[in-house]
Amino acid sequence: MNRFALTASLQEIKTLRYTPAGVPVIEMVLAHESDVREAGQMRRIEIAVSAVALGEMALLLIDTPLGCRLEVEGFIAAQRQGSSKLVLHIQQASRHRVPPDPLGSLE
Image (tube, rainbow, N blue to C red; front, side, top):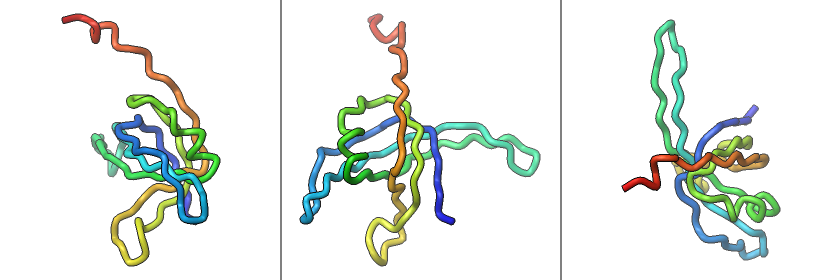
C-alpha cells in the first residue's frame, strides 16, 4: 500500500498551472519538524517534502498562505517516469492557520 500522511507547514507554493488536458496543478514544498523515538532513542526530524495537488484539490489549496500548517494525505510517486526524486501527491488536506508571532511586529 502506498499511503502517506504528514503534518507540515507550507514553505513554498508555485503559480497555478494547467495540464494539456486542462487539469489544474499546484506544486509546493512542505516543511516538517518533529521528534520521534527510534530504537529507544529520540531523533529530531527536519525535512522538506515536494508535493503536488491536482484537480479540485489544487483549487482548494491555491490560496493557502505561506507558513500555514497543513495535514495532508496522499501517495508518493516518482516526479516523472524514470526519476529517483519522489513527490507527495496530495489527495486530502486540511488547513490550520498558525497564529501570528506576537514578537514578529517588534523592531
